[in-house]
Image (cartoon, rainbow, N blue to C red):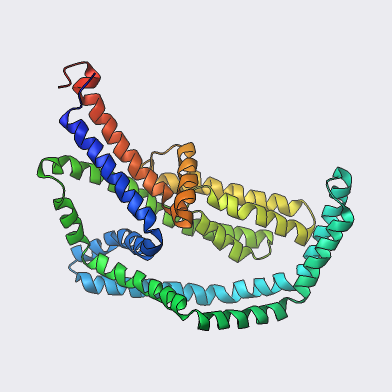
Length: 361
């Protein structure tokens, strides 16, 4: 029976230690969520701060200026987009009775032809939906009053929510300010004899992780613009809002297609009642997917992520099951890190005496 070498035992120790860390993160995922977001923002923004620092701009001043600029950009985007989204929302609510009637007219013959249900029950259900939208303003007022009462009676929960919102920019500022020192202190925890290999591994992880995260954020922004323009051109109701949501969902590969396609098709059909607009929606998605996979991804990220599409889907499912939405968001970066570590372990294995058939002692 082969005996594990010292490197093999150390490798198992690292795997066990990593498993313990992941388990602790899972247990504390609710508490650590704002710090995860802060760490991600610091990781994304550190290259910009480093570039400004190389131009002899003080690091603290660079961080403050960058965060203020981001807040101004977000504020300007809200100011510009809110009237458009608000108008489209109002238009959607006003025309909802027509949409319900069109949906009823479309579904009833299908139900009768397939015999999968009672057309009368379907009509009663759609009539209930219709009446719900007729009383929508009163329900909105009622829900708003109830929400205000709950906010007063659950002051602790509301306070914790505000604290989480404040933690993110504050923690991001301090992480950015001390980013280099934090990295150095963490690196010094690694045993001296393993630092050379660890430095090489961390560089590979940073190359894969940084390329994906920064690239995917840029791609999501470009896709949000593409979908919003395309949906507006085709005439999809709530096209701008739906385009923004679909673009943001593109932060996770393939999720934008899942989130945006069906709502866009349904809204287009019940609004226009023809198949030409459905074809237009499909063309918008086809063009956006071509831009993402044929133009944006190769030029922005290259092949540095190195994950098979099936592996990406598995990672998304596992991340969502374990950590919810944050798990979906961090699934691909996590899979990229694991992929780099496994590739490094595989290289060590192939160079080992055990693999070559020599003495494993």
